[in-house]
Amino acid sequence: HEKLFGVFKHNLTERNIKLTRGFDDEFYAPHSRHTYVKREDIKKNPSLKILAESDEAGAYIVASENGKNIFVMGHAEYDG
Image (tube, rainbow, N blue to C red; front, side, top):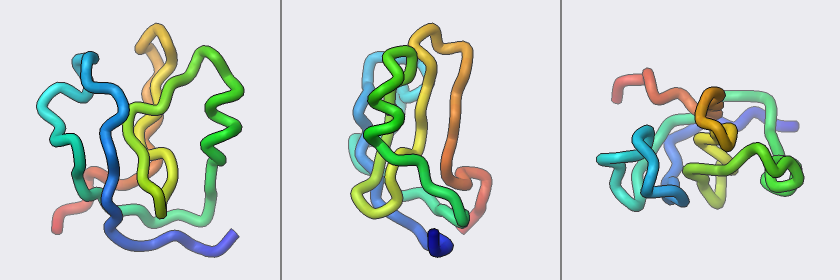
């Protein structure tokens, strides 16, 4: 897979949880990675849900159903 690099528009898909409280419905976030997780593979696991995603960059925030595991695929720590 080619390296994904850039700042991409994301859509919030879950609004009623503490983690995404205060997020805009659309927001931009940077990515820099050589890996990719297919949306379909995440959806196959009933214990995971996508909280935010991008058409170009894919899943951005994924959480376990119980909220104990959070996976962030981008780099929210980067400062523009």
